[in-house]
Image 1 (cartoon, rainbow, N blue to C red):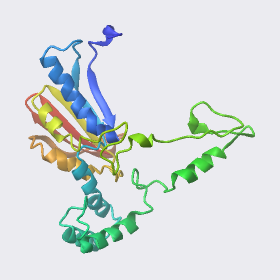
Image 2 (tube, rainbow, N blue to C red):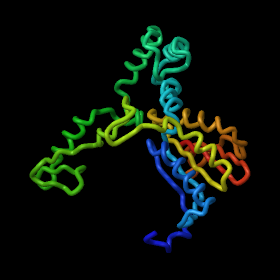
Image 3 (cartoon, helix red, strand yellow):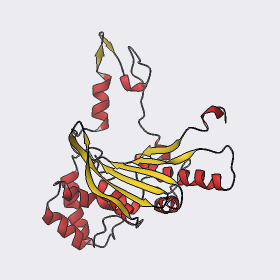
Image 4 (tube, rainbow, N blue to C red):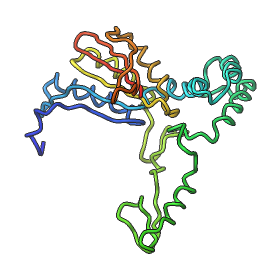
Length: 255
């Protein structure tokens, strides 16, 4: 509204990680608004998501399968857990002792793995923050993450607003976790003239690429270009699949 000179620019709604819960719904709202004449008219072209939480069940449940694929838990542990838990490792029946025992083995194997990037060194936040507080600059103490550098003093730094935290809570004072899945919004966008890029880092265990591929399969889109490598400086940088249906195009890219 303040900068109408940008209205003709192509618009893509983008986000990663937890924003997968609202990128597709927001994109859908923009497309639907254009159809009913909402102003200003945005030049929406599509959306982009990276390692994006999309379905609470599929994404959480896929972590154990991913851990097995990456060799973090053995085939024996995985096959046992798959059998005793009936392939469902999320919201487990507390009376299913065999499943719970297998999941304890899984937890032990994954306890010291950095889930957001399984190859990065594992360290807890208090340890990391202690290192940052002690980082010397010109002989003075600094706290480089706090924003403006604070010399000679240490300010309290809070990584997240816990009042908005959803894990284990359906409702807090400032947050309601009422969108367990955004898949229906992706499905709705198939009927639009829309381009979608869904990319995944293949070392992320929080939202595994296997889970992303699973919910995309539920869209039942025709494949235009099947699984093939893409390159950077003549080196394989990842793999991609392109789907086409009428004016809707979705590309999934692993890297």
